[in-house]
Length: 180
Image (cartoon, rainbow, N blue to C red; front, side):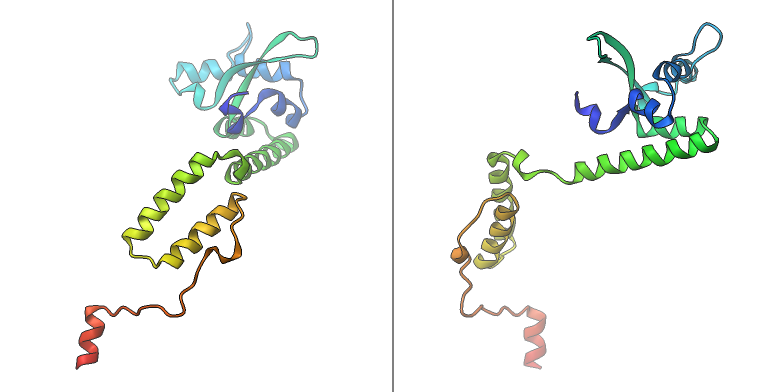
């Protein structure tokens, strides 16, 4: 699936969460000859349906294409407000947990998925900032080693050479206080 799958869930999953038939959920969204569906009502009010529901399709067990929708968190909030009682409560709990898990997965980027070129670019940028800020060379090396290890790049233990002493720098204000 495309990038939408990271920020949406399908009506198939929602129907399962609501313990209802997928077709019945589609009828609520699309309407039928007897009444308007949620999508038509939102369209008529110029509410930006794609903020809630995005037309999609899936392949069923027989290998045939069937309609479904990708539903955003906003769309799930909308649906949760339409369902009351125990079903509404359970659906809300399920979709909130599902979106929480998706957001957590997005925050936990797998370092293996990041190219060595991207890591190198990041380290170059980090080095430029550290040099501009006059960071001590061993501090730059410590940061470089820490980032490298987060991406599974193991550096030798002696990669960071800590000097026996560090030059102390006094600010002009500190020097003036010492003179007085």
